[in-house]
Image (cartoon, rainbow, N blue to C red; front, side):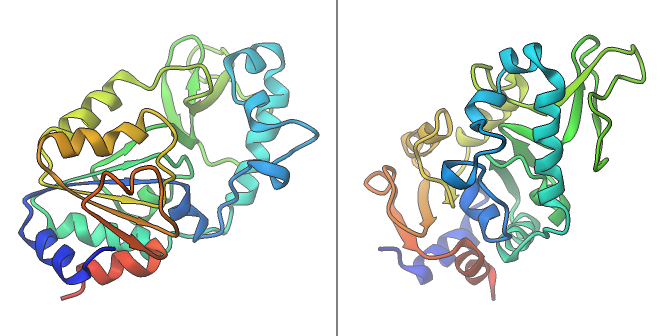
Length: 240
């Protein structure tokens, strides 16, 4: 198990810190996961809707689902974990926050150097001209169209079967290649490529700390595992 005192000391001394967050951090704000028996919507599973094929077949259906997800995010606020990471960034010379979450809560909390691996549900991308813009309409026009070229817009989300955006991955790998400390919070350690980030950081000698409610496949690889809620553990790492 992790030694909080030692982790705080290492964090204060580290010049370069990379943090990876997953669904567990958002769940503490009440963000639903949309998986399992509670994740079904109109008898569809997320894996059946979040694909390029589903969008090509019925874009209105896909947009109905994303509109529902947007509606469920209304009123949900960043939690103590989000805010602690903002403060951690302020105190760290070189700080990178990588998130698997698409809810936009890290950005709303004020995180600056933020890499959203799977995109952002509050952004749209044109299927023709590829322009990306913020959109917080709830409900959103279904389907929405690009104001520039008139073509249909899609959620700016990385769907099943799609590659992660190359520029985001390049920035991720750059941060992992120079970090002295890595914190992994609220992620299962199963979904690739994020599941491999811990091993990459370890290879360059980073001290890796895992924060999660239970042990994960990464627990045998990291230097320290702290069991608990990210919203309780992370604030404790930055208090003076």
